Length: 221
Image 1 (cartoon, rainbow, N blue to C red):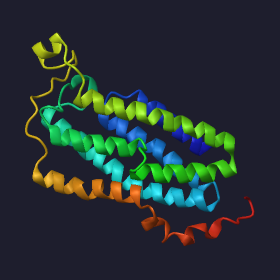
Image 2 (image 1 turned 45 degrees about the vertical axis):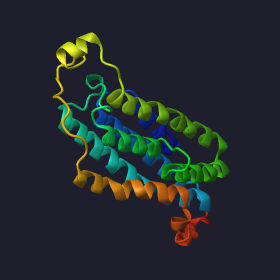
Image 3 (image 1 turned 90 degrees about the vertical axis):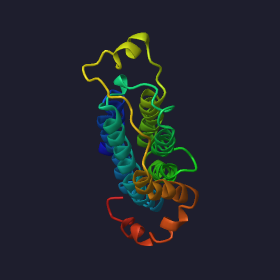
Image 4 (image 1 turned 30 degrees about the vertical axis):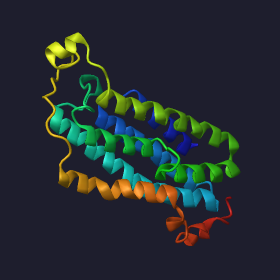
């Protein structure tokens, strides 16, 4: 029950954020709820899914934090309401940001889908009701993640925005600078590559996780 509450509460808090860094932090909290749900399903699928999701979390969240930091470095703001139309001026950053966003919301073919799917299968065997409630987090994840991406990369500018360089917010963004540099791309490349590798071939992790199931027969199960 605590895991499900963490999933739903984290997702709702992420939905309410305009600060991109805070949004990523609360989405991370929601994803951690899925990990706890898998651990306490007390079956092989749930616990293996939890381990996979721990690895996924270590790939997706750092990439999101890096992208948000680089957007702030270039614009002077991390408030998605104060940003508009960055994609045409920073196409490489926008493309990488889109891939990481899709991984974070659980798109099939990318790493997060595999972990969440296994967790939900294991949780269903433990409690179908709690599993159904946990799916609220899956429904909300595309909403707040796509709103994060769209708000920063493709939101249209109004006449007032063009005149003042912002959306009536106290913090005025600086003009965007150059796109992602080579060193920054090199930093993100291994994370993005692993998102695809683990999404398409999760057996790389599951084949070494036989020890995870050692505690499944515990007496309180």
